[in-house]
Length: 258
Image 1: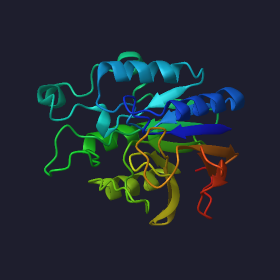
Image 2 (image 1 turned 180 degrees about the horizontal axis):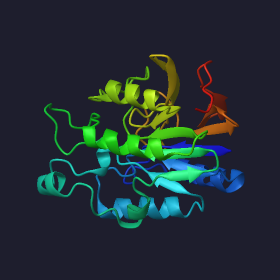
Image 3 (image 1 turned 90 degrees about the vertical axis):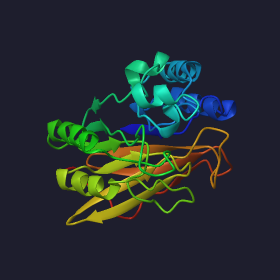
Image 4 (image 1 turned 135 degrees about the vertical axis):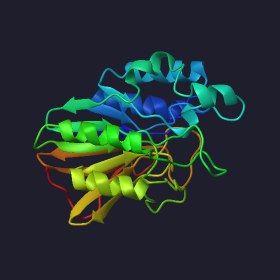
């Protein structure tokens, strides 16, 4: 099985060349699903959601979209941010926070955004108790023996990249997911790929971050992740629009099915 993990496309600041390259990879390789971990848009405008949703649906494979901090309005639309931040998704509406059940694999959505926080930078991550409970409920319902991937926008803990998430309650959420048998938490936000094995008690859970297909590059060229699944193990490959098109970024620790 093969999953494509993409993030931070930022329609409104998207890179058309990178989008075309990704669409060709999907058409040529037919992944089992595309997991989009947030920031589909740049400014949460309806036309951006509509363009991004239509682009994802045109890929012709199962897709789930998580909500990123750029996908809810900022200070220029304070009423919408406070009272209806998760509306007006246009063509993307039916893909938002959609759990995916694939043969042997369960994809569980996790909301890591907040309409308001007790700090200046509201772009950073936050896992509410309700969001964690919702995700854990879906984890519990997953078939025995499945690999379980939780997908959210912000890394729950830092992955060693230049960009940071500073996710509040992220360490608590990661420990709860590890205890529940989650194998990996997929994220975006920092615009650089990583795959880091984290020991939580007597369990290991992987933190996997995708790069960006937008013009808002940081340390890496345009990139997405290919997650190769073989039975109860998996490997993460970083796919980049560069002279080095594909390389493994997985830590040496492999995680088997629960």
